[in-house]
Length: 143
Image 1 (cartoon, rainbow, N blue to C red):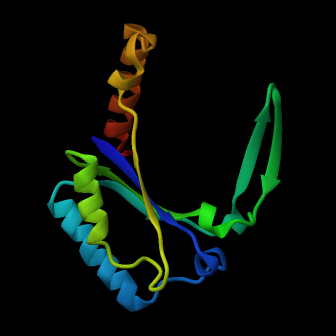
Image 2 (cartoon, one colour; image 1 turned 135 degrees about the vertical axis):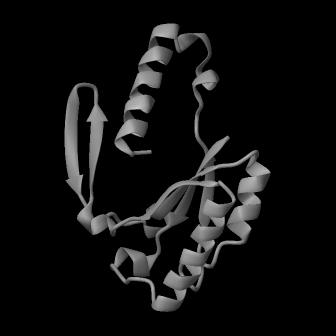
């Protein structure tokens, strides 16, 4: 099972405040544990929403809104992609995580859809196309 682990933003991450050396060291050690356990597939911190944009869809119309976005607690400051056996295992790993902000913080755990989750709608042709894409990404060294 794959899970996306979402580190929620706060006023400091949205202001572009970077983590101190202590937190960077702690997170580095934590990430090493994830790698050694075969859990970590990907993970990155994200720039503040002021450097981002949103694209809203309404039928065929697209509207672009540049950041910053107002609700910091609804924004994401970083993520991991993990391969674990269960949601419970993901929860246990998150509980071991250093506090990402040093104060109040929230980390969200969301399961990633797998091909079999889509049932018959995900036809053999679509499955083949998905496999070709994944093989291409693996050859290029991208997740």
